[in-house]
Image (cartoon, rainbow, N blue to C red; front, side, top):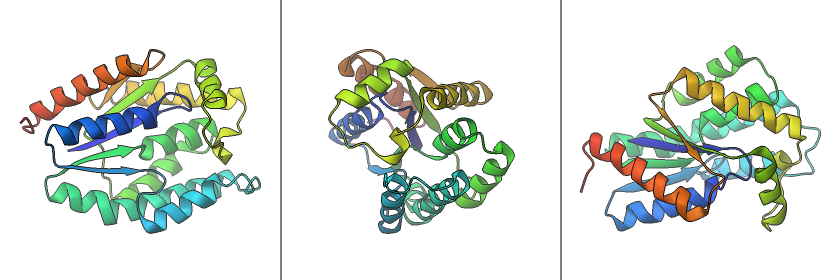
Length: 210
């Protein structure tokens, strides 16, 4: 089973990802974790390039192709083999981030992005995607006060993040059976309780129950 976690900046996505991964392993699930961009040696090199604040002249087109290159390597090297072995794959972001950030945020051609994504992934879709939805102002304030490293993608205007949020909402509406939206404005523990419950429900439905 392939599970992804999505969310805009400051949604607590990476924290929830780490907590969920720790919980599932303690529960005895055979779990593979990864992240985007990155997850492989090649992908981590691409991630460094994408996030380097010195690369301010990077075009939106170059940006999306780099994300897709990292994704192609990840699917071939990590995700595909793990799923073939009937393992559970949990990823911190996947191609929905490209559609939300580069498609809606950067306003690139969505049809082109869909085709690039299909090429990079071989059409591999997640079975379940959790969207941690947070108020834009709250999310950005968390980023500023959280003591985390600021990368190139964090240096965008508020209007950009509004488009990203609308993009995610559009993606959810187009494929509601795959998506679950979770209110991430709440405390970490409250959000994690919902994340665990929803994931375990789906795992049991798919026959992964302990």
